Length: 494
Image (cartoon, rainbow, N blue to C red; front, side):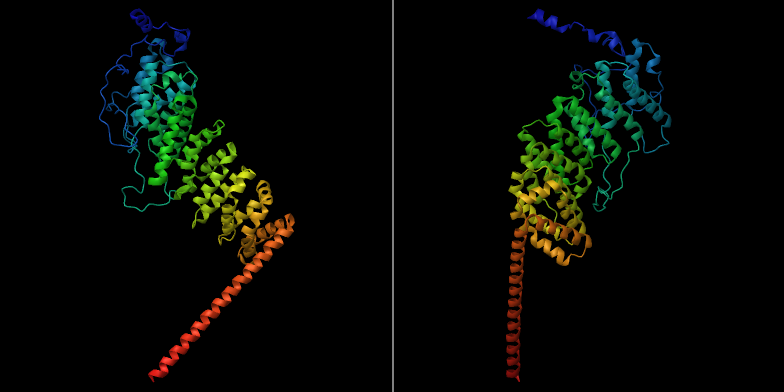
């Protein structure tokens, strides 16, 4: 046993570890000079944690102007010295600079920017592999730069009233010229064909991924766009992280729906999920169906749904296209969260409902058509012309018209009264014209059913009128009796 352990301790170098495959020569062939590299096997002194969200990384070294000096280019030094130079460049890029004052440390900022740009170009040019030591230090440098306390939103700690997220001014991070290059370097590292996931997952671990997801709350849309691309690439390349990423995104959605109703990156996270859902295998796992019912459908509830509705609608439609049996769940979910007073939100819901119905089969349509067309009837009579018009556009969709025609004996009685009210009294001419066209369509499909519905409607109208007349007569009799009694009391008093 001892001999086996001794043999296992010295791995035989493979062909892939030859010096020509590494930009800096084979691992362990160079001394990093003055740069101290902390390996996992060595005890590391950690800086005190800061009480921030996202969690603060290890504090960067204190800034010294003498430390931030231009270094020679990697391509200008011998291969044997590149690892040492690469690590020194990473140390320069680890220094935090103050961007609140653009006139402060200008030279250091330019040196750091050029160094980052060189590292990005180095990866982009495919100059070769980098050693595990360099990979570890590079991810540490990335963490120091991007994992930071995000500035408070404009409504926080200012005494201002909470405003509509669409009306708020976008905050652009002043350090973006450097942050962009750091994100670009991380992206190049993740997508590089030379990056071995078995090695990289030691550094891009669950903690790193969770902090990365926390950054989606950044107000800067440029940062969220980079985060979206990087997280999507990590999800595709690191299969071990997939369930963890889905769970982390779920937790953000739950907190947004049931607690805060404020989060800047919901749209970007939904874009990633749209691509993920598209790749789900069939039959669909129960976990994914629960995600639809517990997270995606309730995301229709928060007030700022308009800011991310396009991406949300795409995700929901993807589920129905993958498994048509989910149509009933989705439609009933939309009806549950249907807006009552927000007309613009109603228009969005109607658009999404049409997309879902396009992927709905007859059996699922029949399960939910009664509550569905009761809601559509209310939309047809909406005084807001865009709501009424959007509901009438359903009859421009051939698939939906086919479903309605197959089930016209149920659908027409539910909406006939709404159609007649629009023809008799809707103020908008476009809505009036569209209603007439829908009415003609039903007459052409089944004139006998249409006449039966009209007869029932006239009977109902006549009955309602008779009830109203009786009510008026009753009130008139009560008024007469009250008047006679009052007159009698007056005569007695005199």
